[in-house]
Length: 174
Image 1: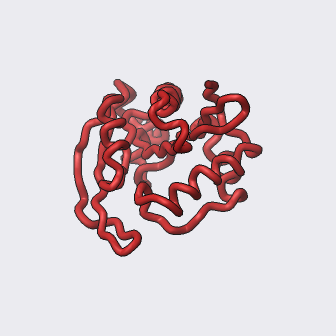
Image 2: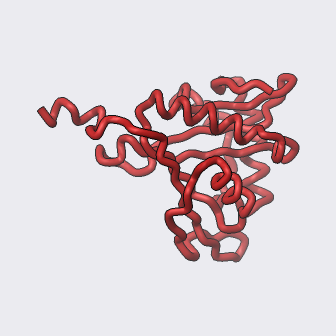
């Protein structure tokens, strides 16, 4: 297995993984399938913070992060997403993707990674716990899909010491 930065050529494979999860599971609350163009644009925007796992040239999963909330006070906090093809689950693909993503996040001065997980996905909750995330909240019935109200489980991992001043506010603080 190889972990590398996603390229726009990976967009169709990433789209296939994401859309199967959107269509067939309660892992995500959305019903809106992704287009190849939207995935390619996300890859371009996120750059090094969008990784894929591949084996024998086939994409087995992806992990990325983006803003948790807007505003300078959240500059060192990101929300991540990780999705795997069914055949890649339980094969250490997720763990490898997250180790690589966390290394990039540390280089990017990210202090906290957040995971928002559907309560209908206990495997993801267990996975995140196993890699050092802690449950910090549960928002009852904020999700709705297929006629079901679903809880959102919030987990976070503190990556380590970073500057106490957000990178874009250092000049303003002087």
